[in-house]
Image 1 (tube, rainbow, N blue to C red):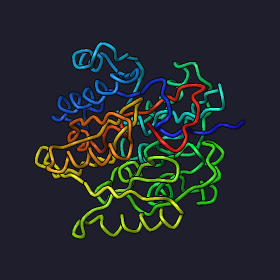
Image 2: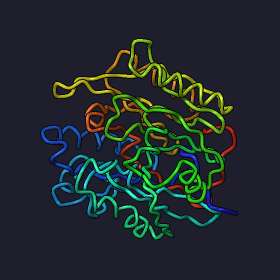
Image 3: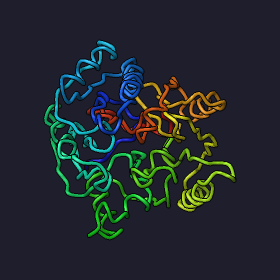
Image 4: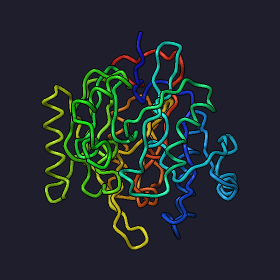
Length: 335
């Protein structure tokens, strides 16, 4: 046996999140951001336990006001609230569970301070009583996706960016991914969304495995600036022998006078459900139906997320799953 990272559709023990706490980033949007974070957590807790990190008493008081009582609050230091990227990446080996704590530098040192966020993964693993593996490799959880069967997808734009691991070659990064996550094959896409400047093109805004061998991929109209990049990503996936399901819906919303991209691809799979960001677009129902078809047997729950998107992400960016120990690897369906 060896450690492997389970696919997101495999059974979870719980979901981890962090309550919004970077006041200088959210500014006047903070109350609305808190409401939308609460909306995501309250949707998930219908299906599995949720542990919410709160950085201080202000955050805790607001969280208690907005969250369902079933959501557990955990007081730990934090700088920001994108736990997909600085939380532990869990791997399993039979009855053993290990939290891999990758290096975190706030997406290429774009946002300071980030010391508390860099230490948060190890603190969460300790709180949960799991084995920790601390790695120097700078790697955000939103920058890759796995199918649980040994294949990983990522983007060159992010993982090869000089602001992450400038001293490592592509081959060295691949070796570290294989060693830490138990994958055998890395499929490199090119770029993420052109609007995704903060993270340098995270893959979880554009692509997600639906089952081993199949990927749901963002596609856009010819006039959209992402058109060429998404076509190239489709070519790369198909060249790698993966089946591609096109997802032709990409929303834009006005948030405090700014045009914000809202990617419904940034959904989160929890036990028995898919939590999908929506923004009141005409195509929201069609987008939800497409995702329902891609993940049969799951309840699809749309949650307002345009304010979260204004901060730089969506439900997937603000969550991190803790896989259930001993859960059997799923076969070719993800019900």
